[in-house]
Amino acid sequence: MKSFAGFLLGLLFGVGLVISGMSDPAKVLNFLDLFGTWDPSLAFVMGGAVVVTFVGYRLVLNQPQPKLSEVFHLPTKKDIDGQLLTGAALFGVGWGLGGFCPGPAFTAVPLMSDGIIAFFPALLIGMWAGKMAPGLTAARA
Image (cartoon, rainbow, N blue to C red; front, side, top):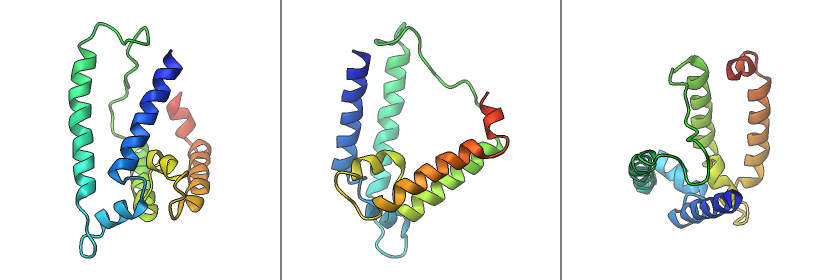
């Protein structure tokens, strides 16, 4: 049941990304092009996601326990350090250059969006480099 619920929620998320146009890297790149073909719709998509997440967390965390687990699995680390800032900066630069972040990239595969062939090797190399970088594995333990 847990896997099926995860599948349905992932499918809903993917459909939402396709409907909102986030599987098209041009949407992201046009959002970042302030003095050219600027498209503000990404801000509305992100704003809607923030509102839904804010309300959803309030509703879910008021429950005594999750529906498909024994306990809530929430992050405990709250400090902002150099590793977090570096990772966020690299993620942002990659998103800005390619127009993809991992979620929309997976929805773009069946659509064969421009740049998807180059994105996945870069994603895999970045994940590998993150594991191999000195100090990152010690910080996770």
